[in-house]
Length: 296
Image 1 (spheres, rainbow, N blue to C red):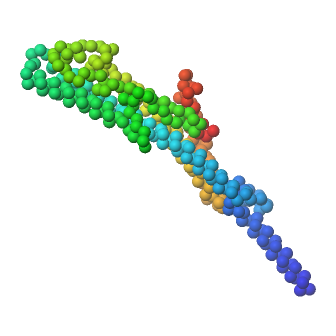
Image 2: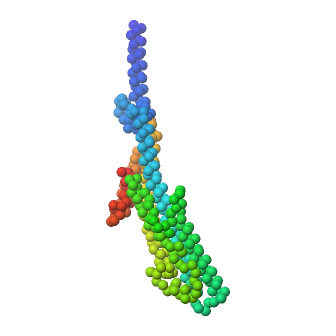
Image 3: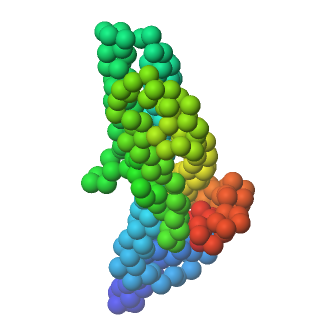
Protein backbone atom coordinates (compact mmCIF):
# COMPACT_ATOMS: atom_id res chain seq x y z
CA UNK A 1 0.00 0.00 0.00
CA UNK A 2 2.84 2.41 0.85
CA UNK A 3 4.55 1.55 -2.41
CA UNK A 4 1.38 2.42 -4.36
CA UNK A 5 1.13 5.84 -2.66
CA UNK A 6 4.77 6.58 -3.40
CA UNK A 7 4.27 5.66 -7.04
CA UNK A 8 1.26 7.98 -7.29
CA UNK A 9 3.28 10.79 -5.70
CA UNK A 10 6.05 10.33 -8.23
CA UNK A 11 3.51 10.40 -11.06
CA UNK A 12 2.03 13.67 -9.78
CA UNK A 13 5.47 15.22 -9.45
CA UNK A 14 6.35 14.14 -12.96
CA UNK A 15 3.17 15.75 -14.32
CA UNK A 16 3.94 18.91 -12.38
CA UNK A 17 7.46 19.08 -13.84
CA UNK A 18 6.07 18.53 -17.32
CA UNK A 19 3.58 21.38 -16.81
CA UNK A 20 6.39 23.69 -15.69
CA UNK A 21 8.47 22.86 -18.75
CA UNK A 22 5.54 23.81 -20.98
CA UNK A 23 4.89 27.12 -19.24
CA UNK A 24 8.57 28.18 -19.08
CA UNK A 25 10.22 27.71 -22.50
CA UNK A 26 13.94 28.42 -22.92
CA UNK A 27 14.76 32.12 -22.86
CA UNK A 28 17.00 31.58 -25.84
CA UNK A 29 14.00 30.52 -27.99
CA UNK A 30 12.71 32.76 -30.77
CA UNK A 31 9.80 35.19 -30.32
CA UNK A 32 7.74 32.96 -32.56
CA UNK A 33 8.16 30.04 -30.12
CA UNK A 34 7.24 32.28 -27.19
CA UNK A 35 4.15 33.57 -28.93
CA UNK A 36 3.07 30.03 -29.76
CA UNK A 37 3.30 29.00 -26.09
CA UNK A 38 1.00 31.81 -25.00
CA UNK A 39 -1.57 31.21 -27.71
CA UNK A 40 -1.97 27.42 -27.85
CA UNK A 41 -3.48 26.47 -24.46
CA UNK A 42 -0.09 25.36 -23.14
CA UNK A 43 0.57 22.82 -25.89
CA UNK A 44 4.16 21.65 -25.81
CA UNK A 45 6.40 23.60 -28.22
CA UNK A 46 9.93 22.64 -29.16
CA UNK A 47 12.21 25.55 -28.23
CA UNK A 48 14.65 26.88 -30.83
CA UNK A 49 18.30 25.94 -30.62
CA UNK A 50 20.24 27.86 -27.93
CA UNK A 51 22.05 30.05 -30.47
CA UNK A 52 18.98 30.98 -32.54
CA UNK A 53 18.02 34.13 -30.63
CA UNK A 54 21.59 35.41 -30.62
CA UNK A 55 21.88 34.89 -34.38
CA UNK A 56 18.52 36.59 -34.95
CA UNK A 57 19.55 39.55 -32.82
CA UNK A 58 22.84 39.82 -34.67
CA UNK A 59 21.01 39.95 -38.01
CA UNK A 60 18.56 42.55 -36.71
CA UNK A 61 21.37 44.66 -35.30
CA UNK A 62 23.26 44.58 -38.59
CA UNK A 63 20.07 45.50 -40.41
CA UNK A 64 19.38 48.44 -38.10
CA UNK A 65 22.99 49.58 -38.45
CA UNK A 66 22.65 49.64 -42.22
CA UNK A 67 19.52 51.78 -42.01
CA UNK A 68 21.25 54.13 -39.58
CA UNK A 69 24.28 54.40 -41.89
CA UNK A 70 22.04 55.54 -44.74
CA UNK A 71 20.44 58.09 -42.44
CA UNK A 72 23.84 59.40 -41.28
CA UNK A 73 25.17 59.63 -44.83
CA UNK A 74 22.20 61.69 -45.94
CA UNK A 75 22.54 63.89 -42.85
CA UNK A 76 26.18 64.55 -43.77
CA UNK A 77 25.10 65.44 -47.30
CA UNK A 78 22.50 67.88 -45.99
CA UNK A 79 25.19 69.52 -43.83
CA UNK A 80 27.43 69.91 -46.88
CA UNK A 81 24.59 71.44 -48.90
CA UNK A 82 23.76 73.84 -46.07
CA UNK A 83 27.37 74.97 -45.67
CA UNK A 84 27.69 75.57 -49.40
CA UNK A 85 24.43 77.55 -49.50
CA UNK A 86 25.52 79.80 -46.64
CA UNK A 87 28.93 80.37 -48.22
CA UNK A 88 27.41 81.07 -51.62
CA UNK A 89 25.12 83.72 -50.12
CA UNK A 90 28.17 85.41 -48.55
CA UNK A 91 29.96 85.34 -51.93
CA UNK A 92 26.95 86.95 -53.58
CA UNK A 93 27.01 89.79 -51.04
CA UNK A 94 30.76 90.29 -51.56
CA UNK A 95 30.29 90.47 -55.33
CA UNK A 96 28.02 93.45 -54.80
CA UNK A 97 30.91 95.16 -53.05
CA UNK A 98 33.22 94.26 -55.94
CA UNK A 99 30.82 95.80 -58.43
CA UNK A 100 30.62 99.01 -56.40
CA UNK A 101 34.42 99.25 -56.11
CA UNK A 102 35.00 98.44 -59.79
CA UNK A 103 32.48 101.08 -60.81
CA UNK A 104 34.45 103.71 -58.91
CA UNK A 105 37.76 102.48 -60.30
CA UNK A 106 36.38 102.77 -63.86
CA UNK A 107 36.39 106.55 -63.45
CA UNK A 108 39.56 108.07 -64.96
CA UNK A 109 39.27 111.03 -62.60
CA UNK A 110 39.97 108.83 -59.56
CA UNK A 111 43.73 109.01 -59.02
CA UNK A 112 46.44 108.98 -56.38
CA UNK A 113 45.60 107.90 -52.85
CA UNK A 114 41.90 107.51 -53.64
CA UNK A 115 42.67 104.97 -56.38
CA UNK A 116 45.16 103.12 -54.18
CA UNK A 117 42.56 102.80 -51.44
CA UNK A 118 39.94 101.47 -53.87
CA UNK A 119 42.43 98.99 -55.27
CA UNK A 120 43.16 97.78 -51.73
CA UNK A 121 39.43 97.52 -51.05
CA UNK A 122 39.05 95.39 -54.18
CA UNK A 123 41.83 93.02 -53.08
CA UNK A 124 40.20 92.75 -49.66
CA UNK A 125 36.79 91.93 -51.19
CA UNK A 126 38.35 89.33 -53.48
CA UNK A 127 40.13 87.69 -50.52
CA UNK A 128 36.79 87.61 -48.66
CA UNK A 129 35.25 85.69 -51.56
CA UNK A 130 38.00 83.08 -51.32
CA UNK A 131 37.53 82.83 -47.55
CA UNK A 132 33.79 82.30 -48.02
CA UNK A 133 34.42 79.56 -50.56
CA UNK A 134 36.69 77.83 -48.05
CA UNK A 135 33.95 77.97 -45.40
CA UNK A 136 31.83 75.70 -47.58
CA UNK A 137 34.18 72.84 -46.65
CA UNK A 138 32.75 70.32 -44.19
CA UNK A 139 34.64 67.37 -42.73
CA UNK A 140 33.28 63.91 -42.03
CA UNK A 141 36.03 61.80 -40.51
CA UNK A 142 38.95 62.02 -42.92
CA UNK A 143 36.78 63.05 -45.86
CA UNK A 144 36.22 66.69 -46.83
CA UNK A 145 33.43 68.02 -49.01
CA UNK A 146 33.05 71.45 -50.61
CA UNK A 147 30.09 71.64 -52.97
CA UNK A 148 31.23 75.01 -54.32
CA UNK A 149 34.80 74.21 -55.35
CA UNK A 150 35.01 70.39 -55.54
CA UNK A 151 35.65 69.01 -59.02
CA UNK A 152 33.78 65.77 -58.26
CA UNK A 153 30.16 65.40 -57.26
CA UNK A 154 29.27 64.10 -53.82
CA UNK A 155 27.93 60.55 -53.69
CA UNK A 156 25.93 59.26 -50.74
CA UNK A 157 24.08 55.99 -50.12
CA UNK A 158 20.36 56.37 -50.70
CA UNK A 159 19.24 52.91 -49.57
CA UNK A 160 20.56 49.66 -48.12
CA UNK A 161 20.83 47.93 -51.49
CA UNK A 162 23.70 50.00 -52.84
CA UNK A 163 21.71 52.83 -54.44
CA UNK A 164 23.45 56.20 -54.51
CA UNK A 165 22.34 59.80 -54.56
CA UNK A 166 24.70 62.13 -56.44
CA UNK A 167 24.78 65.78 -55.36
CA UNK A 168 26.35 68.03 -57.99
CA UNK A 169 29.32 70.19 -57.01
CA UNK A 170 29.99 73.61 -58.54
CA UNK A 171 33.68 73.23 -59.40
CA UNK A 172 33.93 77.02 -59.00
CA UNK A 173 37.26 78.67 -59.70
CA UNK A 174 39.18 80.42 -56.95
CA UNK A 175 37.54 83.83 -56.38
CA UNK A 176 35.21 82.84 -59.25
CA UNK A 177 37.98 83.76 -61.69
CA UNK A 178 38.10 87.45 -60.77
CA UNK A 179 41.50 89.10 -61.48
CA UNK A 180 43.84 89.61 -58.57
CA UNK A 181 44.14 93.35 -59.24
CA UNK A 182 42.43 96.14 -61.11
CA UNK A 183 45.43 98.10 -62.34
CA UNK A 184 43.67 100.85 -64.24
CA UNK A 185 40.35 102.44 -65.11
CA UNK A 186 40.40 100.50 -68.40
CA UNK A 187 40.78 97.21 -66.49
CA UNK A 188 37.81 98.15 -64.32
CA UNK A 189 35.66 98.95 -67.34
CA UNK A 190 36.61 95.67 -69.00
CA UNK A 191 35.67 93.77 -65.85
CA UNK A 192 32.28 95.49 -65.74
CA UNK A 193 31.41 95.36 -69.43
CA UNK A 194 32.21 91.73 -70.26
CA UNK A 195 29.18 89.45 -70.43
CA UNK A 196 28.45 86.40 -68.32
CA UNK A 197 30.04 84.09 -70.89
CA UNK A 198 33.41 85.82 -70.54
CA UNK A 199 35.64 83.92 -68.13
CA UNK A 200 36.79 86.07 -65.22
CA UNK A 201 34.20 88.78 -65.78
CA UNK A 202 32.10 90.15 -62.95
CA UNK A 203 28.93 89.16 -64.81
CA UNK A 204 30.21 85.58 -65.05
CA UNK A 205 30.95 85.48 -61.31
CA UNK A 206 27.48 86.81 -60.50
CA UNK A 207 25.84 84.24 -62.79
CA UNK A 208 27.81 81.47 -61.09
CA UNK A 209 26.40 82.39 -57.69
CA UNK A 210 22.88 82.36 -59.12
CA UNK A 211 23.46 78.92 -60.63
CA UNK A 212 24.90 77.71 -57.32
CA UNK A 213 21.87 78.95 -55.39
CA UNK A 214 19.42 77.16 -57.71
CA UNK A 215 21.44 73.94 -57.73
CA UNK A 216 21.87 73.84 -53.96
CA UNK A 217 18.21 74.59 -53.29
CA UNK A 218 17.16 71.67 -55.49
CA UNK A 219 19.73 69.41 -53.82
CA UNK A 220 18.51 70.43 -50.36
CA UNK A 221 14.92 69.56 -51.24
CA UNK A 222 15.90 66.13 -52.57
CA UNK A 223 18.25 65.28 -49.71
CA UNK A 224 15.78 66.53 -47.09
CA UNK A 225 12.99 64.29 -48.38
CA UNK A 226 15.22 61.24 -48.49
CA UNK A 227 16.66 62.02 -45.06
CA UNK A 228 13.19 62.31 -43.55
CA UNK A 229 12.21 58.91 -44.90
CA UNK A 230 15.55 57.30 -44.00
CA UNK A 231 15.25 58.62 -40.45
CA UNK A 232 11.78 57.14 -40.13
CA UNK A 233 13.01 53.83 -41.52
CA UNK A 234 16.00 53.72 -39.16
CA UNK A 235 13.79 54.48 -36.18
CA UNK A 236 11.33 51.76 -37.16
CA UNK A 237 14.16 49.25 -37.64
CA UNK A 238 15.56 50.04 -34.20
CA UNK A 239 12.14 49.63 -32.61
CA UNK A 240 11.67 46.31 -34.36
CA UNK A 241 15.07 45.16 -33.17
CA UNK A 242 14.20 46.13 -29.62
CA UNK A 243 10.86 44.36 -29.84
CA UNK A 244 12.40 41.20 -31.24
CA UNK A 245 15.33 40.95 -28.85
CA UNK A 246 13.89 42.30 -25.62
CA UNK A 247 10.54 40.52 -25.18
CA UNK A 248 11.74 37.22 -23.71
CA UNK A 249 8.62 36.50 -21.70
CA UNK A 250 6.35 38.38 -24.08
CA UNK A 251 4.17 39.91 -21.41
CA UNK A 252 0.98 41.65 -22.46
CA UNK A 253 2.74 45.02 -22.23
CA UNK A 254 5.70 43.92 -24.34
CA UNK A 255 3.43 42.27 -26.85
CA UNK A 256 1.65 45.60 -27.32
CA UNK A 257 5.00 47.31 -27.86
CA UNK A 258 5.91 44.79 -30.51
CA UNK A 259 2.63 45.32 -32.32
CA UNK A 260 3.17 49.10 -32.18
CA UNK A 261 6.63 48.67 -33.69
CA UNK A 262 5.26 46.50 -36.49
CA UNK A 263 2.53 49.05 -37.17
CA UNK A 264 5.12 51.82 -37.28
CA UNK A 265 7.18 49.83 -39.76
CA UNK A 266 4.16 49.40 -42.02
CA UNK A 267 3.42 53.12 -41.74
CA UNK A 268 7.01 53.94 -42.66
CA UNK A 269 6.83 51.66 -45.68
CA UNK A 270 3.70 53.41 -46.92
CA UNK A 271 5.24 56.81 -46.36
CA UNK A 272 8.28 55.78 -48.38
CA UNK A 273 6.07 54.84 -51.32
CA UNK A 274 4.11 58.10 -51.10
CA UNK A 275 7.07 60.44 -50.58
CA UNK A 276 9.63 58.93 -52.91
CA UNK A 277 7.50 57.51 -55.64
CA UNK A 278 8.25 60.46 -57.93
CA UNK A 279 11.89 61.05 -57.09
CA UNK A 280 13.33 58.41 -59.40
CA UNK A 281 11.94 59.36 -62.79
CA UNK A 282 13.36 59.70 -66.26
CA UNK A 283 17.07 59.15 -66.58
CA UNK A 284 17.43 58.70 -62.83
CA UNK A 285 15.16 55.67 -62.64
CA UNK A 286 17.99 53.23 -63.27
CA UNK A 287 20.55 55.21 -61.32
CA UNK A 288 18.94 55.51 -57.93
CA UNK A 289 16.88 52.93 -56.07
CA UNK A 290 13.88 54.15 -54.14
CA UNK A 291 14.33 54.27 -50.39
CA UNK A 292 11.38 51.95 -50.18
CA UNK A 293 14.09 49.31 -50.56
CA UNK A 294 14.90 49.95 -46.93
CA UNK A 295 12.06 47.58 -46.16
CA UNK A 296 12.92 45.17 -48.95
